[in-house]
Image (cartoon, one colour):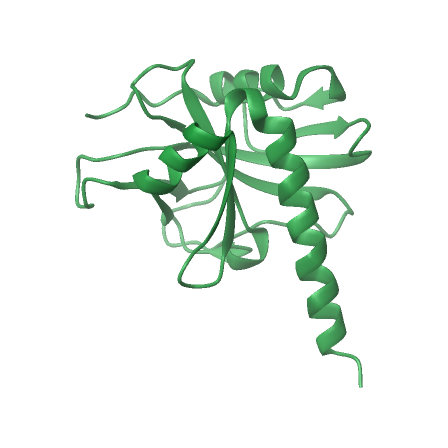
Length: 182
């Protein structure tokens, strides 16, 4: 069952609805990235690259859902890059409409360091079985074969999912920082 692709403004509106009143100073509602400041408990500026996360048909197994990485102004054949050099927290987010209903979807929060640089229209996947776990539990953390840690959250659990994503990213950063110390 193919899902309707949402416009960028629709994706951003859903995200802002689900984070609620912790988002302020919102910019770029119609294009990537969505910029905002997340108040307590996060206290950080974010750049959210929100994509449709779509299921078949078309060249994938029935249970595989994917995000196609294309950022604004990226041309075919050109490499893209998620830039956090300005101190903002960059989020790569997919929105999957499992039951072909805009309101009944899940957020897929991918690990930035695994996708910081990418080819035009590169895709990243998640499987329906992992999405279903999030539907059962609210927030589900999955470690992929490439060691990427993905956080999947039901709409009403997005704030909890973001907390989990930020905690995991901090652990990864601290672990990576420790590798360079002699």
